Length: 429
Ligand code: AMP
Ligand code: GLY
Image 1: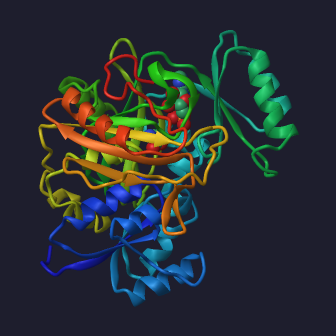
Image 2 (image 1 turned 120 degrees about the vertical axis):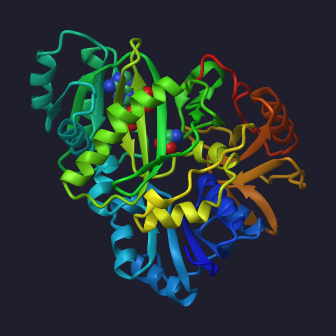
């Protein structure tokens, strides 16, 4: 890699993107990091917003050229599904994010299932239904509940239902095909076996031939302690994962990662970005793939990047240029990290926004990553469900927990809510 410094752009507006920009800015390879759109908090933290005349990829390319941006990291899956990576690469930018074709691994469950079958990786047995009557025929053959129903397309985390009974399955079908809650297009549904075991995510940088695992992490998906209440975008994360074992990682590498890489090569799939593999580990220790994501996990990334000691930009450039085989092995601090999300009242159903956020005074040893915040009369106010998160390192999880929580306790907004058990061993959820 040449030593010249470069300008780098991160696309997205959440805490994940704040963490990406924060780590990128520490690299000796980074001249300046821009975000688009970022949020009021990232701007307060000193990151520039890339200004654009309109919200489309042509304007993005124009602005990126004006600012001499060389490397773009794409955060949200929606942009990848729209083909932003393809267009940016055509404009000679280096991009971390897979092309539109391979982004279907996340944006189409049917595509992902076919890929898994071709690659020979273990996953739940499934059938497909494209209408209420097809679903009826599929359910006629099902003897056991629960079953898992997955809408084919992107649904912002609302497309998966674990139906405990036939009635619950048909109720979801009504929302799809009768009430058209997920849009007017013909909708396809995957109906699959409900797997038992414990969940684990395996996240890495991938260039189609090489996969470099990032540090492991566990996320906490439910709104309340002990995995109770509604599913959320994620209420916190810890790294390393509480479920990590070297033996299991070896099995995942051989049984899942290597098979995916082989399939990429067989199909000549150009995959340059993050591959996030969501797994269920059976009680016998066998990994089954639940899903692929084609982007950095949120909030896992915040916990993971707190532990990274290597040059992140070098890793990103190797990904973008498909040279990961010559990327030095990343170094991670032995310390543990804990990242706790603070959310607005009413999250995830109906977050109340517009409340002033106070007591953000700087503090060493912890890191705030902003998400749903905007500025009003010179003051930061809440503007989304997940408002911000606080991350901290510690010699062990307990120390990291204490640090992160003592900082989050001091930050105030009306009816702030957070889980108190991030970093506790059991149960996660
Ligand atoms: P997905 O978006 O496919 O990962 O599904 C979201 C969540 O639903 C997963 O994180 C699991 O908690 C659960 N899930 C998905 N598929 C299955 C399955 N086949 N068996 C059990 N749980 C599942
Ligand atoms: N934390 C799960 C995700 O990013 O999809």
